Length: 120
Image (cartoon, rainbow, N blue to C red; front, side, top):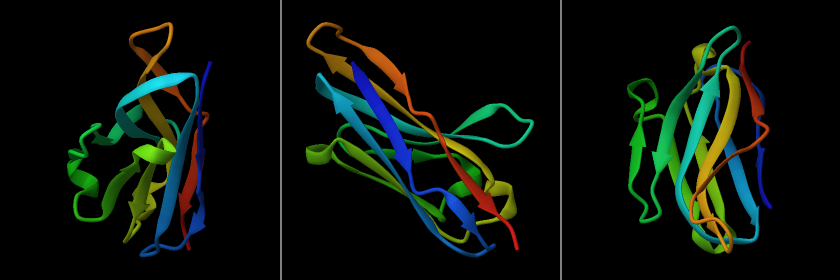
């Protein structure tokens, strides 16, 4: 089994910062791409940022220059540093990872999400 657990969400004022973490555990042999999605209230789940296993990153235009992805492969963890937060960044942030296990060559796993609220 593979487990993905996000943490770090909360309430922050506009202009503030938060750091989200996503830890992958289980019988994994490799982790490929790791992604963060955001689902605003009443909206669809949208891709925010991706980091490959060699550290290459890609961001949606609305967060470029404000959000930074990093990963610690030794800890099977990906971080999303969010600065200069805006009310429109509010939503549930989900971690999505592509992994290989001893049994399955490719598996996509979602976390349960962590809520970020940007408000006065």
